Image 1: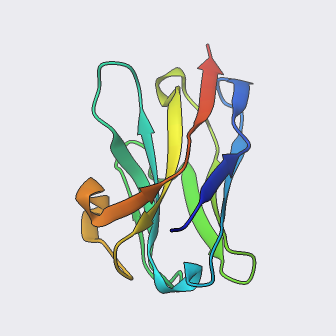
Image 2 (image 1 turned 135 degrees about the vertical axis):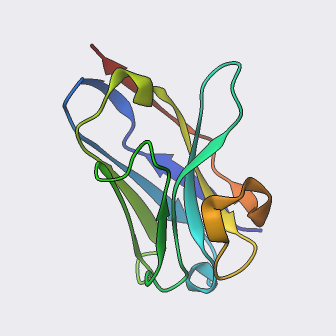
Image 3 (image 1 turned 60 degrees about the vertical axis):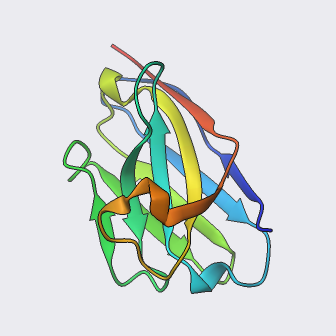
Length: 125
């Protein structure tokens, strides 16, 4: 079973930047797609970004396109989410997730089977 550990969350002012990291255990990190999801109270968890097993394909939710960038370093078993021009509506708990396969089109939640514990991101206005 893979273990995913997020880091890098925190409090930032609107317009600022944060970078989330997700370190994965296990030797098969590079065989799977990875995704970043977020959730706020009372709302469903949504995929904000996803990346193909080799980094060749990415997906972004419309709400974060042009502001967030997902990347991965398979040598370090780590996936990143660079978040720029943050807005108060980006406030959420962000979760790292491992896909069931090398790619899950559209970042569909059912396409992921392992989850991190979550990292709080708070953007003040």
